[in-house]
Image (cartoon, rainbow, N blue to C red; front, side):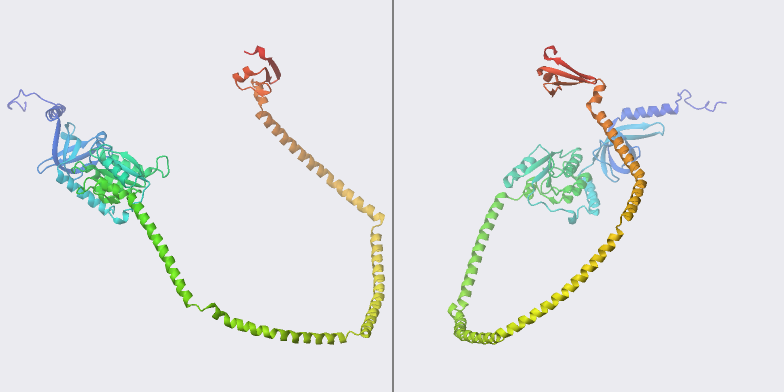
Length: 498
């Protein structure tokens, strides 16, 4: 019995599941196609494959969204949970799971309020990491040699900076052109800051001493590239001091909080970068004048102090009065003292001369002669005994040197020489053989490295006019040619040359 006999509409066609799924997919993609949807971002998942999945929701419904791996890099921003965004893309359906979703290819923040909320969230995150701390900021160089400027080549910003630098203190400027708004802004500014830091000091393209990141004023959407986290982290990690000059005085971006110094305008950034040259020259002249006045005043003060000291000192006559009197008294005592000393020396001389009478001297000379004669006799006896001892020692030595003993000693030395001789010959022969082998090896090396070995392989050496010929021009100029082969030399007349 057919279960559907009494069911109305028996003529309704039957469809397979795949046909229904395909039809739904075609309807969704053809009817909706490219859509623009506003909503709040729910969960966000970045798969290992590189695809990104997230939910877009409002107070009633949830729309599944996906961005394929090749499309992720083209997004202007990465969605975060809780963010209100506008998503553009193509609606599609999956028959395998009976689901539909949005292939998101463009994502933008929905409204200024959402942008400000996102900015506050990023500020709190970076502040918690300590990137805003004053301890992380570097002092600006007083007078940088080279200034790197990250900005657009179009517009008045770069002209204002260069003009202000030229007016205050001309410096070398390296410009790194970037987009200052739009999707390309953040990655280009990040690469510029990292690129300046990667330069080598003193290289062909020198590394700047200071970086200025500048842009004119605009809306929060126009300035949003400078609120990206990548730009803020690049500025915070910069080893080169960095001035941010983005927008007007009332404009504030994330890079302002991490930079080493914030300028209200690009022109103000140039003023922060360098001092005024004329003011420095004037200040230097002022310091020079003050130094001259100080030196003059110091000299005058010392002159007055010296004059005061001179007035306090006593007169030279009073200083020399006492020493002069002592000298006069000493001069009066010297003649009398010399007379007394001469008398004393004369008395001592007379006492000494009294002991030098001729009889006393004669007696002393005779006594000394007797002592010399006595010592001469004793010396003769001592010399005789010494000569006898030497003569006895000579006889003993001569006895030991008799011919028979010398013959025996010579025989023993000859036998020892005969025993050592074979070994000496063996050592000498081995030494000669080693040196001969080494000489032969050197000769083989010489032959290998010499040009004769090359001649044996079919080459030849050409000479002309007693010089080596290495090219056709020299061969044509030579009167005669001599060609050396491995087995001999051949002369060629100049008339037979090609």
